[in-house]
Length: 215
Image 1 (cartoon, rainbow, N blue to C red):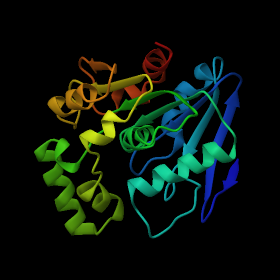
Image 2: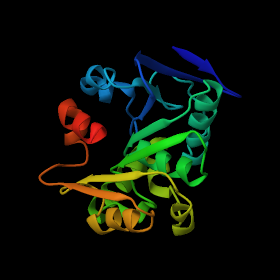
Image 3: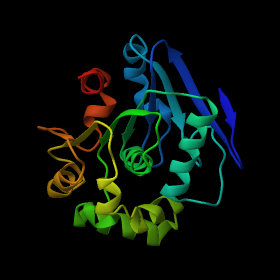
Image 4: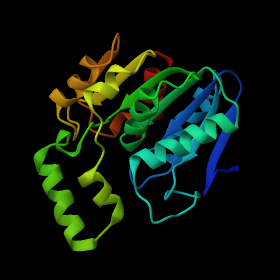
C-alpha cells in the first residue's frame, strides 16, 4: 500500500487486526527484514511494516536525515489516524523511535528501540572506521548519514514518557555502555541485552523478534 505525504510517498504493508504496530527497518534495508515475524505479530496487532524514504518502494530523494525520516513516519501515522501505536524500530528504525517519542506524540502506546545509537560515536570504533573507509571509496549517502547523524541529546531522551524497551545484542556494533546510557536516560525504561546476539541476528530470526515484541 502507498500513502502520499507532503513531498513523498511511503510504501507500507498492512496485515492483521488489533492495535497498530508500526515496524521500522534499518539502514539500506526495507520492511522485508521483518518478514519472518509479521505473520505471528499480525495475530495480535494490525501490523504496518514501512519502507522509510530512500528505501524499498518508497520515494527516493536527495535528502538523507533521520529527523526527516522521523517526520515522515509521524505524518503517516497521523494521516492514517492511528492511536495506541506500538512503535518498533531496528537500527536506524530504533533511532527514529527515539526521535519520534522525544516529541511526545499523544498516539504512542509503547516504543521498542533495537540496536539504536544516539550519535555516531556510539558505534564501535572499528565499525565506524570501516564505514568511513567505505564512504570515502563509494560516496554512499546512506553511509554519510551514519557517520554524521543522529544527534539525540539527553534532554530529548528525558522527554520520552511512554513505556520504552531498549534492546541490543551482546555482540552488537553499538557499544554496550552506549545502549545502557539510552535506557538510563529514559524514565522507567527496560533494558534487554541479548546474550550471544549480534546487531541483527535476533531481528532476522522472526520468532526471537516476536518474543521481544510480545513480551
